[in-house]
Amino acid sequence: MYGAVPQPCNPATCYLPTLLLLLVPQKEPLSPPLLAMAGILAAVPAAWVALAVDAVVTGAASSLAGFHWLGVSLTPAFTLRADLAADGNHPAGLWAVALLAGPAVSALLALLVQVLVESARSPAWLRVFALELLAFAWLRCPALLAAGAAHGRGPVADLYATLGEPQAGRWPVALLAVLALAAAAAVVASRAVEVGKTWMRVDGRQFRRRVARVLGGYPVLTVLAGWSIVMPWAAPAWMAVWLLLTLSAVSVLVS
Image: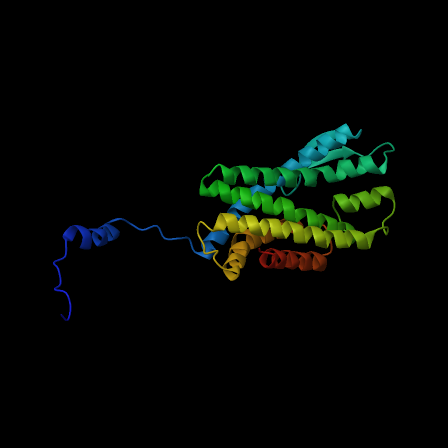
C-alpha cells in the first residue's frame, strides 16, 4: 500500500554499464587552449601554402597578361614570391590582373579545399589545416586593401604606385577594406564553428563566439602578425589596429 517491494538488481543491467565505464578509457574533449595551440600549429604551414599559391597564380596571370615572369624565388622569410619584370607599357586592367589575381585565386581555392575537406569527413588534423588555410587566405585580402588605403605595401598599393595616382580613391578603398573584412570574418567564423563543434559547445551565441576565437581568431591573428612583421604592409600602429579589428570581427560576426 505504501510502496512496491524493492526487486533484486540484475547484475547485467545494474553493474555491467558501470564496470564498462570504469574499464574503457573515456575520450575527453580538448581544452580551448590546446585547440588554439593546434590551430596555430596548423596555421603556420597553411599560411605558407596560401602565399605559395598566391605567388604561382600571380606569375601565371602576369605571364598571360603580357608581363615577363622571371620565376618564383624564396624571400628571406622562406615564403615564395613571384618575380616580375615591370617593363613596357600596360593598361590599368592588365596591371590589376597581374597584381590582384594571386590573392583572389588563393582565397577561392582555400574555400574550395575547406568545403571539400568538410564534405569528405576528413581526419581532424586535415579539417583544422583546411580551416586555417581558409582563414589566412580570406582575412589577408582585406589587409591588402587596407594597405592600399594606408600608403603601405602590397598588390593594391603597388597598383596605385604603378598607375601614378597615389591619392586617388583612398577612401573608397578603405571602405571596401572594412566591408571585405566583415564578409571574410563572417565566413571564417561560420566555418570555424562548423569545425569546432566536434570539440566545443556551440548551442549558444556566446559559445559560438568562443569557438570562432579559439579556432578562427587566435590562430589567424598569430600568422597575420608574423606575416606583417616579416613583410610589413603598413605602419606598425596601423597594422596593430587592423589586426585587433580582425580578431574582433571574427569574434563578433558569428551567426
